[in-house]
Image 1: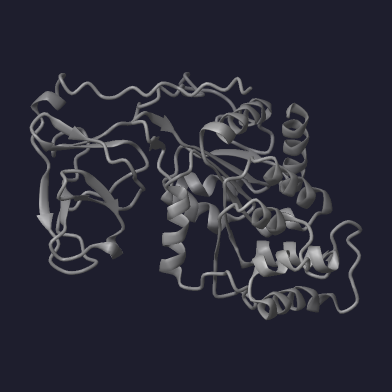
Image 2 (image 1 turned 90 degrees about the vertical axis):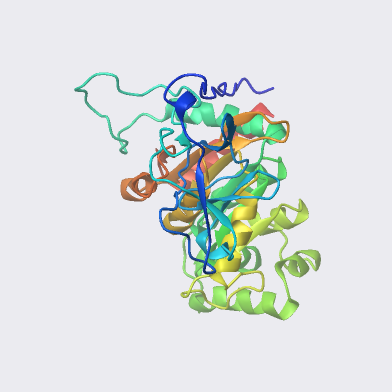
Length: 367
């Protein structure tokens, strides 16, 4: 039983100024597909309310940053990417965020405490010298809570498959139900499958680090074999892929999205090479997420972070925070998310392989 307790959502008081005197938000029609009207309002990661009619403030159920708010015929608000706009769509307009334009961005929805209250203090930035014990403990409890009450989305770089122990531990974490969805690229799946077939990752033994003969062929041979069989799922069902991360995902029917890039070898059959389609598929999982854990993949982490709001409206109408953890050895990579607008992302600076092994020991021992 998890001891984790979600913070209570604190909605704005619309009976107090300046919100009680705020106008209704203005909507303008889209004239050209994919182009927002002049003065459009760009969304953030925070809960945002739109006063459609006087006294009727609407909180969209799904949100993401750098998008626009579109009024639906049913009177609801849908947050959409620019590329999805169609002529006739009604887009909320206004650049002020404190009610002046009928739009209110709610920054203090969950009453987060600030880490630094004094004007001058040491160690106010995250670094490899920072203590992460509290973050680990909170993450353990959060994972146990959201295994039963949320949607745990993992964003994975290939480094987790390069090590025998971390690969086995992550597969066990999947088997224990702590993974509800995965976002990754061609490399994570490729090197996990290479490890399953040859025991190597990029030609290097995942335990001893010894280089195999003609090791630079191993990942290409793995890709080629899966392309011959038609899919990763087929390779698992035929016993070609017997263990590892992808095998566990397939066996437990955990959804995953492999987004392609220009540098991909192959790629594997499941890799989505169309970037817009990949983004749509990724966002479909992000819409469900209550906790996101991004490990050792800077570009995928930023992509997922840009899609992930700081809150989630649950099916029962309650509003809860969405937690976002970044695991990386690089301070630059971890802090990049904040630079790109994902201000609620929390960083744990450590070797990803060590992180997964420690996480496994704690979670499995408690279960």
